[in-house]
Image (tube, rainbow, N blue to C red; front, side, top):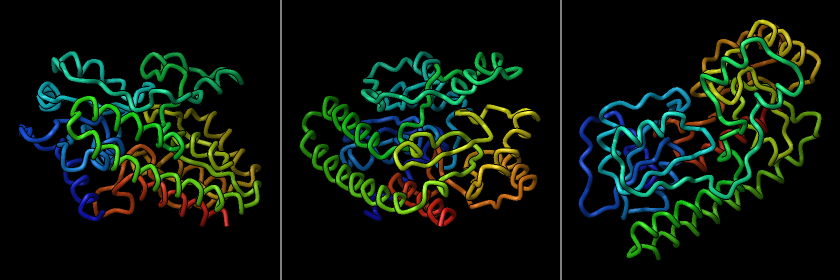
Length: 313
């Protein structure tokens, strides 16, 4: 297990190395961001070579692929994407690379939640909102489905199926690895449901710097209030900040959490103005580097849950 984590972390950083050399013995797979890269490595094992485009602590919302990513994708056999508008640059990259392999959308079969912009639009109009939607549109959906462990089981199934179709000779190994990973995910899900159920409902309210935790909140009965929308490109207005500060003061929030790939200044401002303590850092859209607390997907979920539970208790 430790070896797999190390290998996944090393491969995740390959995006920074120009001129990736694909192995002739392994299935060449490109994953769009670090969480998908980790899940793919766990399932594919020694039969796959995984290139992750947006590596540890990277922000897929604002990523801009360049010539080396295009060249690498053009020679890959499989491309694994999150979908739901998470990678707004993906279609452009596919076209520029001439990719002819199999595109696998990991969220296929998942019913997405509505994006924060859609909820806000139902309640009130925000100046400049239309301009933001033109610049970065998730299509009215929240793409962070991987934050719900039940959805992660669908990711695993889809990835295993796609790899098996691309390399049928190794399908049995892919299934074995996927079944083991699914069992670990299901066990963690059951544990977290019990852990959060033991916390009084009124304590399960926290503020975050980026609206990436709707799925996690739905799974474990937590209300997340965010400074930014589902994209880290979203900018909160002075009116938005004042409203959030009022919510923080009046809403009996347990803590405010920063995120590993977000600008912390807005959240820190809200913390100072409201008197709510900063509970720590959460990992939203990206893993940590291999030496950090969230070098793989399950570690990410465990770490986030531990931080939240400590603040609520």
